[in-house]
Amino acid sequence: MLPAEWIEHRRPGDREVVGWIRPDGDDWVAVSLLGHDLTGPVDWLAAEEALDATSLAWFADPWMLETEGGPLRVRIVEVTPDQVVVQTDDFGAIDAPVERHVLPWPAPSRLRARRSGDPDGRVLAGVQDETSSESH
Image (cartoon, rainbow, N blue to C red; front, side):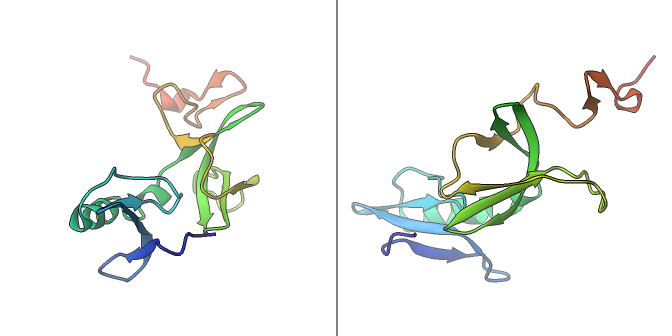
């Protein structure tokens, strides 16, 4: 449930919600759709700029979900103030089997941006796809 004092911020072009701005004393803090602070205490304009710069682009990026079986490459498919839904990356194939995970909101730390060394989707059962590396 969103705190009553949080103010919705919409993208100027299409009015899509891209986060919230919450009060912090005499300042404001930009909060992402995942429920995480994007800034520390700043003025209103800086909070708006941080949300506009972040926008919804992270929906297009792969993320990692830490599970007991190891990290899974996932895509965020839904975010509401009630839950975050991710699914295993289908790499654009409409017939690929996917596994959905419903997470609490704000998103837990086990959902994180990809880092160097994370599985990239070209390594299956310990064997790297030959098309993913050049052989010269």
